[in-house]
Image 1 (cartoon, rainbow over the protein chains, first blue to last red):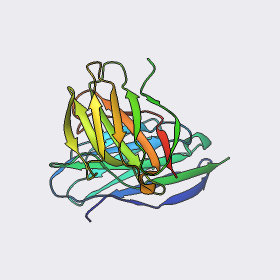
Image 2 (cartoon, chains in turn purple, red; image 1 turned 120 degrees about the vertical axis):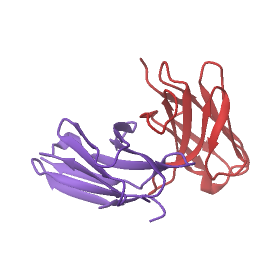
Image 3 (tube, chains in turn blue, green; image 1 turned 180 degrees about the vertical axis):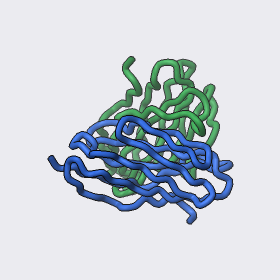
Image 4 (cartoon, each protein chain N blue to C red; image 1 turned 90 degrees about the vertical axis):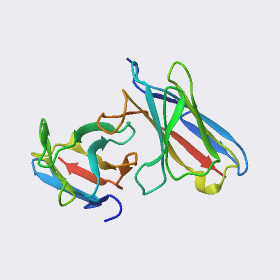
Length: 111
Length: 114
């Protein structure tokens, strides 16, 4: 993997469903991984900055895990709500680079 | 705290023209980064300013230049506009290096080049 890949590109869930997305990145020379949430007509908002292999972070119903050895991070949303509808972006930094963003996963939650 | 602000919100230019976009960082932040987001893509890093110096630059031509002022606000200048420069331009600020610090984004400037 040369760049950041996010999957799925989009998904639609019902209110109350739990869901997860994947962010894959090159595992060599890893420095940090960022997750951002971007709601329509708003600015991207930082969720997590993760640096250590095995890191797990949580903010309310949203949590993330990090595996730097195999180059992936999972973002989990428990009990999705309509206000969780947004595009979720991950971005990683390796030695000598700035943030490299994926294309994002767009989540739509129906009530 | 007003957060990160950008101006203008929208801008329409024609090919060959020059444009200047402006960004005011979140209060207390000293580092400003600029990103270009083309349709269907993730934000792409243009450059980062710290202490009025360009600290890092992405893979963008010299037509893209910037400046940071003593109050940490920043400008992005694009010369000789091309149709492909049409995009959303995002400014983000942070306190120090963005490797380990979260960034705060502005609402963006939508540039259309005709």
